[in-house]
Image (cartoon, rainbow, N blue to C red; front, side, top):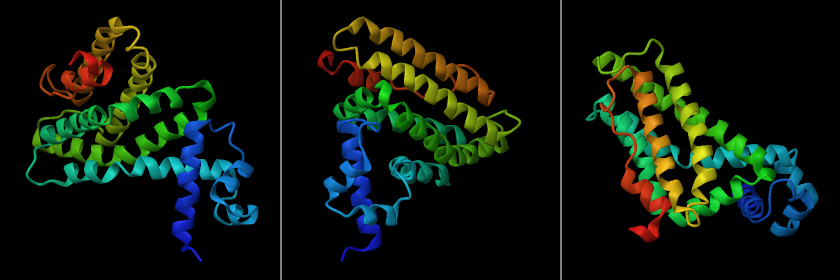
Length: 225
């Protein structure tokens, strides 16, 4: 008999495959239990509903990125501005290294029928990543390099802005292969959010490098590299 956590993760893994290959709205509980090969009662032993399964799946996937992010926040050898830069640049580097996965995910997540899945993932990411970012911003205030009255709120607002930008960038990015002229407008938006984050933190424009345009170009137009 499979252990509780192993079975739960097996169901979540199957749900992730199905939600991306079809869509959240199209996948029924019956489809899920057929995919895993379990009884209906077994499914409801682990999840009260498909909506609860979705919430747990989103939290699990977002949480897998958290350890490396938190490790930066806790590194005593780094100043706060170095930590913020590494956090944001690390996101870009990972996306560049996993370009095919990122583009495929964008195409699926930004379909209209997956709006609920996308919204939940965005909210979960903000809730998970705001605390370590807030800790770093608080460190920066103590070090005198950041100037913001409430580090926790600043972290939440910064990540909310970043998430909103990511949505627009994704909508444009999936068209770049056919419309390469979209690359520069995307990069212009990335520069604008970099400026906005610096102003939230009370630092001069250009004081922080949060976006690596080389990585962004690799994501958007790899054939041009």
